[in-house]
Length: 288
Image (cartoon, rainbow, N blue to C red):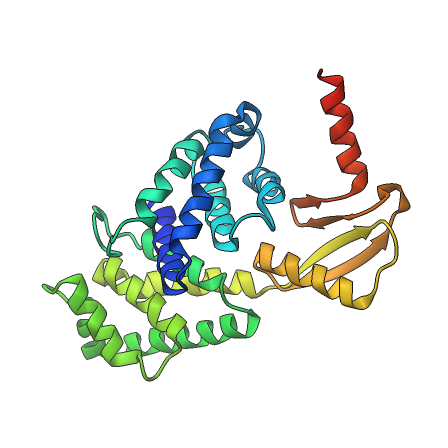
């Protein structure tokens, strides 16, 4: 498991535990792992290096969306996009070890590259709406400026000779009353896992990741028939939760879908049309 993935998983664990959803989410993760292990076709698709990670993720998203906790969907999707294709089944099976653990962020790090804190921060970001992400960027940029201007602050955050708990406590004392809880979580992660000389570099990388999420993306949604504005708004909100992006939606109508819809967001395709279901049924019948 790569360090970015471990950091993302630790953040998901912390968020689920905070909301009291961890036990149920672990059960759902176990069902996803079983699904992959029992389906040769699905396993082959996930480890197919000829397919782009975004394509592989969209297939699994289609299977899991509205059936599994959104955070587990995000965690599984992160594994697909971050890990080497051949390692994905093994990493999925290992995720529960992280979710049931009491790992501190800095536990077991051999090289403090900042990768774990980057994964942790990305999990925090997908929980936020666009305005909160913009606020997070502004707060992290202000901390970067403080680091550049204040030698004493750099020394305090480096915590040379101190434990992870001591470094995290310094962050709490300095920023808990001045910054959002999301910003404090991200800074704690960076301080706990990053080489002291690379704090600024790690924060800059996280700001860049956040800026990508803030950008709007176009979603092309094709419906079988005209629908109400209320229904369209629900669809748009669901797609934004699944893609973790603010979307500009282009609506189209194609009666050949018979019912349902097809949504295309970047490289991801969400096909929940009746035509698609009929095609699947025909394929199943043909295989008998």
